[in-house]
Amino acid sequence: MSNNNGPRERNTSPCGAIDNVDDGCGIIFERRPLDAGSLCQLCKRLQRPGITREEIQDIRNTIVQCGECGIVGTATITDPCGSCRKEAAQEARLAQNPEQAEGAQRRREFMEKRMGQKPAAPPGPVTPQAELAALRSNTDKVGSFSIFYEVRKSNAAGSIDKTLGKSCTPHPENITMLELQERIIKEMNPRWTDKHLSNLQLDETELRVQGNVAFPPKDLGLTIRQWYNKYNTPETREAYVKTPKGMTKGTSFSVELFIDMEKVCE
Ligand SMILES: [Zn+2]
Ligand SMILES: [Zn+2]
Image 1 (tube, protein in one colour):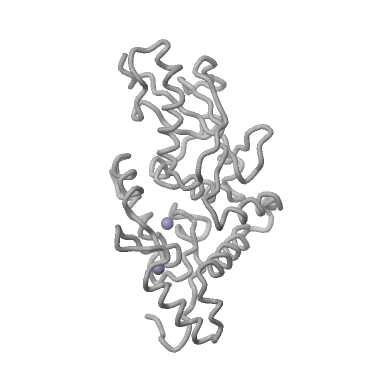
Image 2 (cartoon, helix red, strand yellow; image 1 turned 90 degrees about the vertical axis):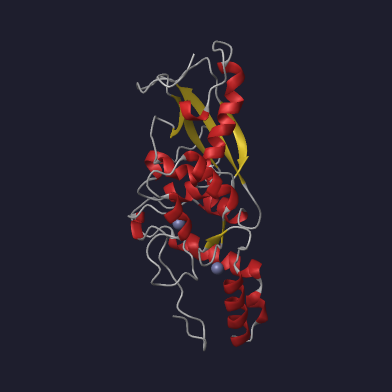
């Protein structure tokens, strides 16, 4: 499929396809073969019917994905993977511009292109400069997101539990939403056990967006950054991305921990 005489055509379609109709991670893997289908390998694994939280967590803990072509693997895969490195080196030689081969440079260009492609629909709200700057500044290091959470024990509107507390804490952007859920439970458990005999368990809770908005369980396998990028589109931003009061857009959002009282064993 690739032509060894020059750079092959770059993929410009995000995982999940345009408007994310196939529910992917939204990442544009530039070196993905053009005929590889809509979902990247990682999303395909995460979308296996009947996948459990433990399996999602296991995939996230053991699987490495090449950010350029999207292939996945365990210990043998690096990011970028060997083939992508080779391909980039060859392109750089052909262009007689060795600087192009430098990973950091390519990565910046890749991210900038990705950012530039994000607001595909011009009528939507424009991404504010501060948000873009925050995203860009995060491309070379692991950034963090300030996550505000509240707790609810019922689906009724406005039924935020006042006794179990709330907080706004920074978390690394590369932990999964599932890990975020575990961290919130851990932080809240000392208050929970004031009135209950045992700690609250992961499967007795659900992570939702502020306002009791649920999202598909398989998205718990996305990192905080991937989750944010997936939902921060003109179509979904309003419903899913709630910036906490006084916090910076682009590096913070609000969630709720729903406690399913029917599952709680007293
Ligand atoms: Zn994907
Ligand atoms: Zn690759």
